Amino acid sequence: MTEPQISILHAALRGRCPRCGKGRLFKGLLTLQPACPGCGLSFGQSDTGDAGAVLLIMVLGAFVVGMAFWVEFHFSPPLWVHAVLWPVVTIPLTVLIMRPMKAALVAVQFRHRSHEMGL
Image 1 (cartoon, one colour):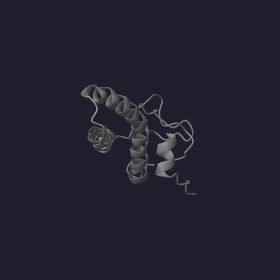
Image 2: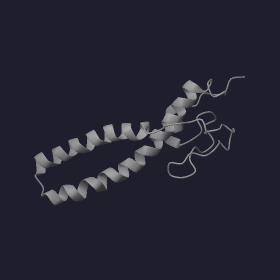
Image 3: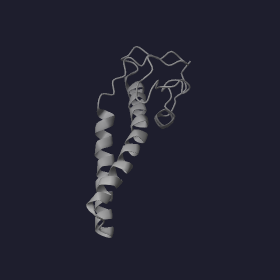
């Protein structure tokens, strides 16, 4: 019997187990559960490292810098506006995007390395 394939996007956006799609992947903001409460899949072999943070820095950093240039050239605000505006935009976006990014990396690892993990 083959297990149902949970899409990587579904697992990432909902923060669910990449095998069953039911158990929660995180026990804190970015801390992985030791195992899935639904199917028992161990997350101990998952090693996302800094890949999510690096990708987030590249993508979100390019977006924020581009928006900062756009605001500067269209509105020419004083420097203090940039100092207030961009941390208020960047910090929530970082927190909002980092969790699905890490979940996607765990799901991709499960999809492509599950035979190496003995699953």
